[in-house]
Length: 264
Image (cartoon, rainbow, N blue to C red):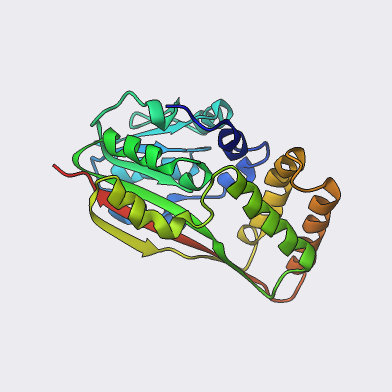
């Protein structure tokens, strides 16, 4: 399969992204999957990043299960491996579109990954192919168009966020993919599909700092692509800090989790 080079470049995790990847855990950042996993499951974690969530999967499936985390970033895979591997936990640098594990897994998971792909349907087809008949595919992803802040951030921050969504859309990424997961699962031929809303609300550090981190990481990618100037990026960062300094602030990102079964 030919992967869109613009989407691949923009979707690649920039230097510094490990700051917010490392903060995640299975229990707090993917509770739908945490509730679904069972001892003995063989699990494929697609887009494992630094392995922060993947390690929790290995704990959940226990010694009779196995978890393989894959990512296209060699740096992130190396970081995940440095944090620890085990008899039931391994990592590999791999692209889900070209995986060599047909029908091997009980569960294939992709959390916050499809949002960065220009062709999520192709990734879905590959994940379906990786699970055995009766196995399950699990996806967790955002509807970026439904993000809310209280109170409303300064205009410089809002202008940056609009530019961020435009930068993604220009590369073919779906900013509202979270609320379209049901359609993707149906199109992939999965059955018994269940989609649940999994809102992510933050009021305190470190999670409330997410968009400040994104401005410092993805923001530089946007500058390099000519979408915004460095002055606008810096102004957005300063505006976000002003918002954070307020006495009360709430950030809600709308996530959706979908689970479907490969027909037997």
